[in-house]
View 1 (tube, rainbow, N blue to C red):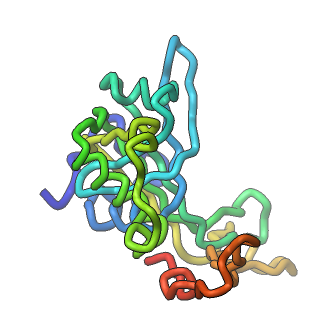
View 2: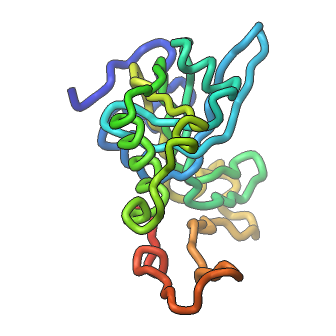
Length: 218
């Protein structure tokens, strides 16, 4: 299936023409992002937690301390919502009312399970590491038994999802186009700067190409 079924919880209601439900669009956003926000409700109290994550097929992988309230909630099989937003620009209109942003966002709904088998857990941690920086799993030391035991990993099966994308210039009221006010788009992008060595780094260790040439995909 190349497209998620549109459900009441995943349907884009505000400006529905910007919505998309195909996996290619949704997964491209998930694969480019670095931080997700995970929403849950516990004892009638909503919580939204920022986390690192990775996508593996039709699942989202999260990790943290075994005692984490969020991970306990997820591994119990409760429904969760995961969102990722990429900001592409500030849309500056002639009127304050029509100011906006160009963005790509994905909203994912599903239920999770705890990954317990060692081989699967290591594979999930590799996916998380490689999502942050390709090649890092190969370069860095692998987790010890103690570190594995101190880390909980959950896999959230994506049941439904949607993307929302805005592009293009501002949409002012026709009467405002003659106003003496600058209007347009201020593009914004995430940029990696020059790597900074750890003060205790051995002098004979060069910066690896994966770090020196770091880029996020789009």
